Image 1 (tube, rainbow, N blue to C red):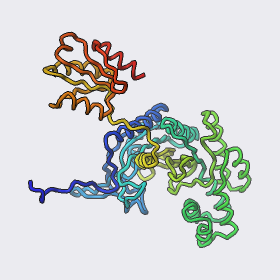
Image 2: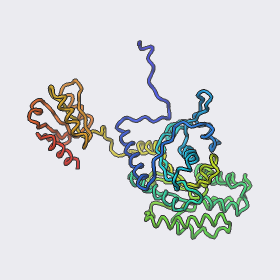
Image 3: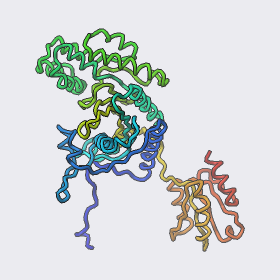
Length: 439
């Protein structure tokens, strides 16, 4: 093929592609998140990337419809999943007769949104979700368990977070008590973007909805109320006699008691009335975790309670509570801020280098070592010197040199590439030495 006919290799914007040494770190993060989920009994679920459009778009609307990757195959209208919650709803509705409730599932997988690619925004990204779905009613212990799980996940990742927790019934009840029941959703949308648009703009938008200036200022002030659960509940619990508001206060008190029972460090969560979560399917507890040392990261994990997960697909009321971590975005933020663990260029512990006609012996040794450590045979047709240079470049910690004399004596030259030390040992002693030096 002539150079004029070559296609320039390139990838779509908004799709992360990592070199192997960074992928090792990302995979390790996935494993730590999975370990946290499994430690509390959440079971794995892997739904298809492709769903019928009728199913996937039933609960969407608004900007999501414009972002969904949608196509036809024959007469079938298909979408690529844009989150993991709608597929969960479909799965639960389809299998509710076989599922044991409460159903605790986690899913770690890629989702797709055709939005404009920009910093911190990807078109393909990994979501790490965990949800508890019950038959009505679902105990508030489930909400507390998800909050506990958030803390456990980020402890596994060695990241210090503060989880900002609230209950949407607080603001729903206040708005209803002030006579704005019909406009509550629109009011909450404005309050949810307070940090982006500023107090003055928020006040003007609220007034345009018919909220008095006095009440607009009260609502803005309330959303800026945060602190310890006991302190904030005491401060706000008498603000309204509205039943929805009182329900929110009662739920916050109950969850606070459960979090104390979980022995959750009180330095790692607060009650923050400003947490609203824009999605209107949230009906109670809502939360957003942030890394206090890097507020510019924004929310690194969010979630909450929803009363009717699968209402579009079944008559059964299936309340749930869950959390979601946008791992691709989090990884990118940590990478850009030099907060990732030190990169390893390989996941290998040992490379076996044959000298002369010893390949068969090297493969036997590989079979022996690979049950305990990661290893490979270097079968490139290059000089011994170049192979040693390559092992050093890949930061492989140990090299086993296997020549014809070693095969006869069954003692092999083991070199520690970090210290430069070299030993003549049996294969059993080589394995023990490697394990000892790795401690």
